[in-house]
Structure formats: C-alpha cells, structure tokens
Length: 613
Image (cartoon, rainbow, N blue to C red):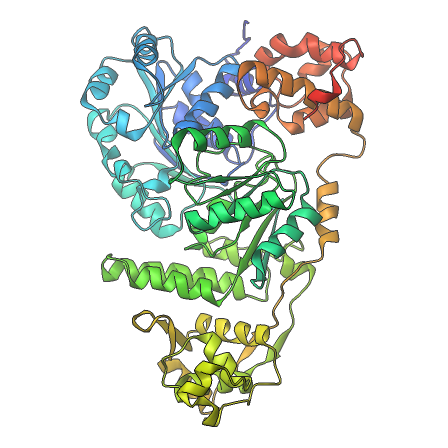
C-alpha cells in the first residue's frame, strides 16, 4: 500500500487514506495540529467523539513511536487490532503476553518498526522500560482515561499518580491526556498531577444527543428491566450495572432464565471465565453484560444500544462515563436507571462508613447530591447533566422528562406528616416502618413499639405505599431528613425540616414514574438504520463481516462498523472508487476487503444464512 500524502494537508490526507474519513469532527483538527506541532494538550471529549484520532494521527505525522498509556488489557488489544486493520504498525505490551511475545514487541520497538505502542502504567513505570524509551525516538505520549489520576474520581488508579515522570524524564516529548468526563475540579487535578501546566485545554461538548436518558422509580427492578429490554432492545447488545458481585450473578441468571442472552462480569470471577464473557460480548451480537463498574472502561464496542443501572452510581461523572458506553456509533441508544430510597441510603452509608478523610467525604457527598438532583429534577435531564459540566443547554426533547413531563404536586402536608412520623417514633426507624405507621398498619413491630397510639398512626392512609416511598426518598434528597447509619439506616430530621414542620415552607414534589412508554423507544430504534438500506443485503454484509472476524479472532466492528455496512447497503457502490468513498473504508481496508465486498454486492459471493449475525 502506498499513501499519497501531500505537503499541503498531510493530516487530512492521512485521515482519508488510512482511516477512511473525509473530514474532521469538532475540535479534532485543532487538537491534531497542536500535538503534531509538539504541543501538550488536555482533551475532554465524550465517548464516541473521536478522542483516539487525536493522538493516532499525530503519532503517524511525527517521527518515532507514540507511547499510549492505557489502563486495561482488553482496551489495548482491541485498539491494536483496529490499528493493524488500517495498516498502522501497532502493538501492546502487557501481562497477557508470554516472554516470547514480549521480547518480540521490544525488538520491534528497538528497531523502530512501531508507530504506536500501548502500555499499562505499571509496565511503563518499570525502570527497564523507561531506560529503553530513553534509547528510542519517541513521537509523543498519550495518556488515555486521564481521569484515573483523580483521587476524587470514580475510576481512580494509583499508578496514574506517578505519570508525572514523563514530563520529568522526557521534557521534549509532547504529551496528550484524554478523558471523556471531568468536572472543573478533576481537570485541575489532571493538570497538576501530570504537570500539564503549559498544556492547551480542549473541551468538547459533553452532549450525546443520540442517548435518551430515562430514570424511573424502583419498584420491581428486575421485572422493570426485563420489560425495558423486551419492549425496546430485544436481541440487542447492552450493559446492566449492579453495585455488588452477588447482584450481578443473580441478575444475569434471572435474565437468562427469562430469555435474555445475559452474562455476568465482575472481579470475583475466575479470570478465564471473565475473559471469555468479555470476548463473547465483544464478538457476538445481542449479548447483555451484567456487571459491576469493573467492566466498561476497556470496552470499545460501538453498537451497545443501552446501558441500564439497577443501582445508583456514586456521581454524575460515573453515571456519564458509564452511560457513554452506549451508542458510540452515533445511533440512537438508551440510558435507563431505576433508583429508590434504599439506593440513596446505601450510597450515603458507603460515604459515611468509609475510612476517607472528612474532605473526601464532603466532596463525595456533594457529588452524590448533584446526582440526586439529576434524578429528581422535573426539567430536562440533558440540560441538568450539561450544567454540571459547566455547559449551557436547552431542552432536548428526547429525555423522559421532555417526552412525558412529570407532574409535580403540593406535597407540603404529606411532607409534614412524614417528618412528624420520623420525630414521634424517636428518629430510630427506617422508611418501611414509618410507612406502616402512617398507613395505620398494625404490624407486629408497630404493636410491640406502641406506635399505634401515636397521633400520626393512620394519618397517611390516603396514599399508597409506593407514593410514601417516593415522598421519603425526596425528603432525603431535599435534605430534610438523613439516614443514620449508626442506627441501621434510621431516618433523622435535619435542621432544614423545622420550617416545614412549622408550616412556614411549602414543599413541591414530583409524582413517581415506574415505566416509560416503549413506543418511543421503538421509534428511536427504527431510526438506527436508514430506510433506504436494503435489510437483506445488510444482513449478508454482517454475515460476511462475522466470518472474517471469527477467522481473525477479533471483534466484528474492528473489521467495519455497523454504520459503514449500513452505508454500503444503502449506496451499493459499483466499483472500488465508489466503495472507497464510503466512510470508514481507508486504503488498507479497500485493498484487503474491496474485491470481496464488490463481489458480494454483485451476488457472486453467497454467505450461508446460518452465519448471519
């Protein structure tokens, strides 16, 4: 393969010929020119926004080997496979390689036969690795998932704190740090810890307009999740996040028993099984991975159609990072979350019972409060999300609140009843017991405590149990009550409750929502493929891709993305020139797959139907 790179615009030529794209997106061009020219950069760009190109192209434009610091083996392997598919000389060095494999990679590095080398931070920081890099012409350092440096963040990696060594030992080599999410405090921490004080900061929009945000009250979470999957994402790839390993295992088994191709993933599993599950998720269609947050950062799968949470995340950053794994291909996707009072109590307990210092606890509490504000808002979810990252927004028309605006009601009297029940029972009981008292239920516990004699007994039988759970949850969110973890999650009043109890402050709450009409989600799914794309041809193209992926033992999307196949099925190119004009088909892929694709389009290659993805 010979690339025709011109002096007038080498970056654009390389983008077109290597990667098959005809133009840059957003700030990509500015970032690439800056880093290729030798400048340092901090890049904040949402998942699916094209961050990787911001270091891959400068790596090819500059002399030497680019060193990419990446936190997970699976992420490195997929990125290396993707680079090799487009003709870039890439390799990774990690614990998955045996001695012979590692020695081969090191020889390639010494001989100058690598454009990019992916390393885990632990491997990079070894003295013999640093010594070797001092002897190697280096194009740049790329620090991927740079938010891992933040001790306040959701994905802290202690090894990242030592990456300041790059500036100290290689001051002439440009560095680019990249992340999909970082609030202003985390950005400042990245700059400080990586010594990027002179770096130019590029902040792209945090908006992911293709993702629909839906948050529902948790009533029967597994049943709610199953309905959501069946009605909106049947036979489509998705991720379900749970807080504990046990819940991951139980949820995956339950979904599988109900016809969903679900697999568990968490750090407590046997390594080989966990790796096999990840490989299936990467290489097969329609797999739903049920996981703890240990799963995700290494996932580069573009066609994840939904991310669901059965437990409340710790922060908006965590929620944004995790939901951003859906719809990386730009096609419609869903972020679905079910939450309840128990989630709020649990997250507050984790903060209060942690061994962290008080400063950390205050920040963690503030981050959780911001997430609760997103959960309880009656306004546009997207606007609230963007505001958190300092970006203005306007109602999106696509989140649950925009599509079905929640009704609010004057909850002052009900709030006073709930707060009074907390007070009169001695501030020693959780929501379930308090609801029994308010609804006048003569349970054994109520009778043993004598709570049937309280003035609040039975004053709340005008509302059902679910409504009262919503009221207590919102009281905690509003800061009028707080869980006492020394008393097994009992609710206690805060100082802010006084004016409400005295009738001096009105309280407005939103009505509970447990389901969102599925028809809207089905309409979104119908948008995923243009109407003019021949569905039979598209299925044959996917089958052809699947065969190649199996033979090469790589994920199917590394061969060609769904969007590229959809464009082929829509435009049905007749020759190599037209095929080369399809987005995502660069010179190497045209050379490698062009004749087969054209033969398939002419009907000369028959793909067995049983191989269809």
